[in-house]
Each structure stands twice: as C-alpha cells, then as structure tokens.
Image (tube, rainbow, N blue to C red; front, side):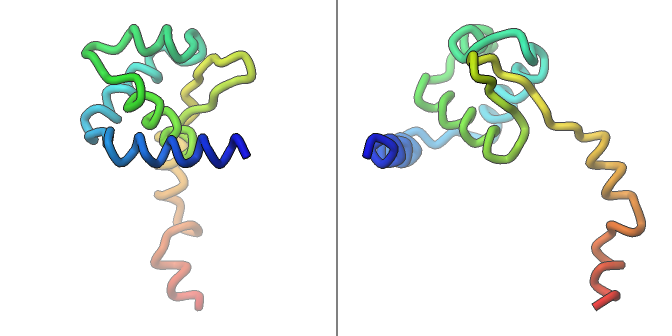
Length: 104
C-alpha cells in the first residue's frame, strides 16, 4: 500500500516539477564526476546551481531507470553508463540495424 502512495506522489511531483534537459545533463555530469563518492544529499550540494529537491529526486529516478546510475544499499550513487562501449556496439556490423532489418 505504501508503494502505491509513493508512486502517486512521484507522479504528482513529476507533473509539477518537470526538469529541463539542461538540468538532467548537469546532474548527470556531476554524478559522473563524483561517481561512487557521495550519497543523494551530499551530491545535491555539489551541484553548480540550485535544483529543487523534488526535481533532483525525479532526475535520479530517471537516470536509474535508463541504467545511467545505480544507487547502492548504503545510498552511494555510482555512474555506470559507458558511452564508449555503447559506441563500439553501435559500430559493430552484426549489431547494426540495417543488417537486422535485411535478415528478416
């Protein structure tokens, strides 16, 4: 029952505190810089400009959903996205969209 309340609260916050792409990118860069060193509040204090706490939490939830970050059991935030690896996979011929399309 508590989970439903949290989901409802998150959706309500999202509706009123929709972050900009610039804010998401800023937070992602700070997380990348301090990966594995800080918890939510400490990391929030490291941001170069003020971000409202509910907006910050929504961005953390989003980054976790798209597998850019992981939050450990003790609350430390770690950046896990590896763009170089993703680029290598995208450049791989056997994984390219055009090859998959022609195979069907």
